[in-house]
Amino acid sequence: MQLTAKLIQLLPLQTGTGKNGQWKKQDIIVETDGQYPKKVCISIWGDKINESVLKVGSSLKIDFDVESREYNGRWYTDVKAWKVESAGNAASAEANTTKEDDFHNTSFTSSDDDLPF
Image 1: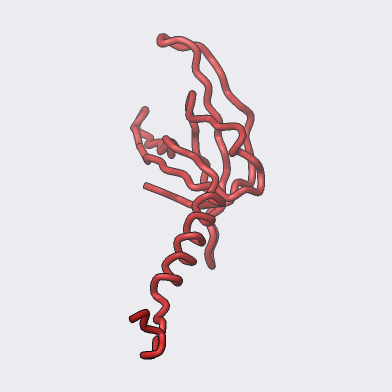
Image 2 (image 1 turned 180 degrees about the vertical axis):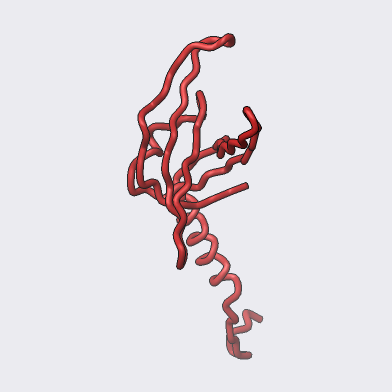
């Protein structure tokens, strides 16, 4: 799944040691656009944490998975990001593509005087 949202809060970085070695987890709170904005807590694990992109107020494009699990009769749901990047780069690429497409779709008028032969 994919979501574009504004980063509104960085929760404290969590670290620890497990059976597979050191781990780290960064939880972020993002807010969606639209008439009824939603806040979502998303977890980013290990080397997927890109601190240069995680700036409060920035727009992010997040690819994620949603997973639920049962523990003692209660269900818990995690939203885990597997790719986080700045949404600003995507918007620039779209703007460049649109300008190029407009150029190619422009109809040129020519008269018989413009022929080279």
